[in-house]
Picture 1 (cartoon, rainbow, N blue to C red):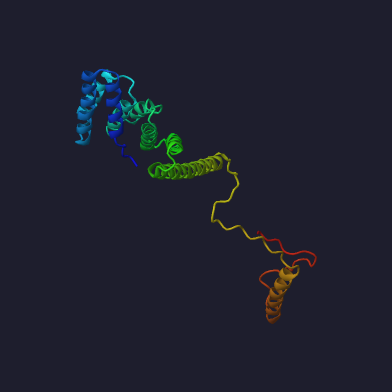
Picture 2: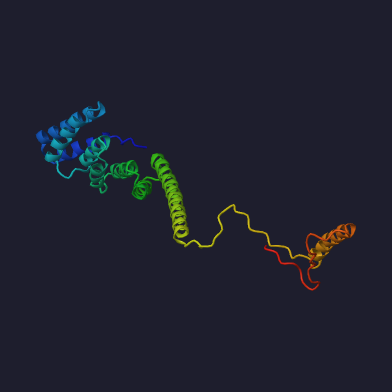
Amino acid sequence: MSRARGMSGPIATLAMLWLLAGAPALAESVPGLVSEGNRLYKEGKLAEALERYRLAEKLSPGSAALHYNIGNVLYKQGEFDKAYDEYHQAFSASERELAEGARYNAGNAHFAKKNWPDAIRNYQEALRMSPGDMDAKKNLELALLQMQEEKKKQQQQQKQQDQKKDDKNNQDQQKSQPQEKNQSPQNTPKPEPREQKQPGNEKERISREEALRILDAMKEQDKPPKDQIKAPPPDRRPEKDW
């Protein structure tokens, strides 16, 4: 995905242009600098390769091929924005292969930054110019997939944030609600209502007690009672503290 495309085509084109312009000494200098830059690029000596390309650019300003090569070095150095600027200046190259390669590598630069919409747009342009470019097609599919996955992940994160926010709001509302003063403590059993006493039970019970006392008193007829027997009136029950 991230590999930059080759530079053999642009080199030959650049040399031919200078030969046709009638400046053989200068033409030999520009192709020589480009050739040396290509060698250093393949050896991984990016700073030296960039220096050669920049020198050639001064001799041949506005060369789409040099912008393409400089963009490849900057891409390898991780300078994706600067690389895109160089590729952009090669979009209008008269050579179809060079223009399409610049679009493809521009898509790679955006892909490296996870800038999916711009990566997709450049891959689509590359495919428009070269429908059979399988690398561009593969990277386009990858960019579309990555954009969908990222959007799904963002939606899930937003949903979790909204849920946390709702939970916090609910907790704040519960804390702000005043508690009732007479609210019974939790886990405290409610008092059971008292059952109504059946009328006559107390009278009947006391009447039996009084009857036993009377019987005892009758057994001791000859002895005066110690206490005067007082039965409650029949129309009321004895008072009792509840």
